Amino acid sequence: MGAQDRTEKVLRDIHVLFSKAEPFEGSKQRVVVDKNEVMELLKELNGCMYDMMEEYELTKRSRDKADREAQKKRDDMAFEASRNAEDIYAASIMYTDNALARIGDIMKKATEEVEDIFHETEESLKKERQEIKSNQLDLKGQLQELIDTQKYLRLIEEENRRIASEKKKDEGEVEEPSPYAAIKPEIHINKEYFAQAGIPLEDGEDSQETEEDSRSETDLKRSAELSRELDEDYFQWKEQQEGSGEEPDHRGRGKGFSLFGKKW
Image (tube, rainbow, N blue to C red):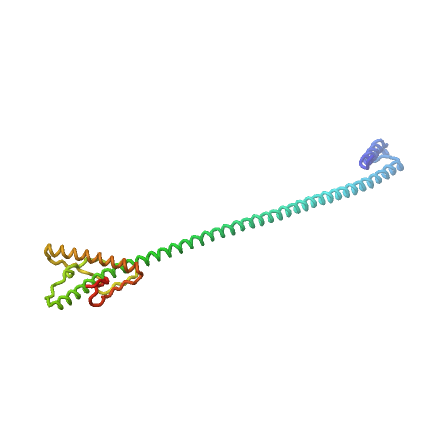
């Protein structure tokens, strides 16, 4: 029987003892009881109280122990959860680091590929620029040849007039106006194009006025025929010069020779 049950029994016995006791001299407040029996009940009640206190202490210790064990269990669970969280955090950091490393490798590879494409494009553009520059130089040369051709035609006309004048003087004839004098080619020069191409224009070439003289139908036919022959001689002579590798001379030759290497 436990201390609590024994205590309850002792209290019941005391209650029964006092309820069955006889009144003292007819008093309703006082009774007559056996002293020894009451002392035994009190002694037993005292023992029950000590037993209850011990049980309480045991219960408290057990509860404290249970609380300590529960706290320890909670601490262990928290530590385990914290350790697992740290492991998860470390794993996530490692995974993130590996992912960033892979991204860095991909970006590096992409950068190298872009640089290769850039270098290839740059080389291609350099080649295109060189080709364009070469074409510009060729175009400038052709334009310069065109200018030199017009100059050369004027020099040819002047040389032919000079030779014809000297021949007529030697023969004692009166100098007649040269049929080439009336041949004035009409030349239109694009100043803006020459400025962009970097070709300077000489004085006297900026503007040329077209002069028209009234000539007879016979003079026109004769002039056209002479101009055609002159052009044929010039281009034939130029092809010969280019075939032989000699540089064309744009200046007048000595007396007795035309500008195309022909004797007069």
